[in-house]
Image (cartoon, rainbow, N blue to C red; front, side):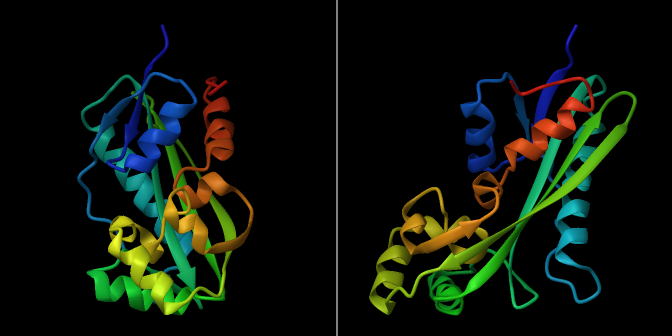
Length: 193
């Protein structure tokens, strides 16, 4: 019998991405405190650690499952850019990103219980924002879309109109690098195909 697959996330984007490939899974909120910007730790360490915390928390209750956790951050000039606090902060963030490259890091953790076997991985993508106007920023922020997203934009929505080009995994930028996730699941004997 196949183990239940659990997504340890509240992210609508991760739920959508996993759902669009047609697998059966359950969503469980991990309710963990995520580590944010840190001078002591790299973005790679932070996203890996946050993803791992999520699967470990959910594993406390689900003892016969494959648990998937992920965390995504936007990094500009070595600084993690989180979710905007309010509309003014979203405008400030988007002005900083304008006409520049930044990186998006996603950490993925997969745990099999009850064995508590864990695999983790980090994917990095590079994003170039176009030279959009202040008026475009204000119109975009007024949509409300950037308010729950690291870096104050969603590439899968209207935020795509702010992006000039990407290098790397599009799904990583959305929040769940599906190819890497499939690779990790394959090592547990599961496949998303």
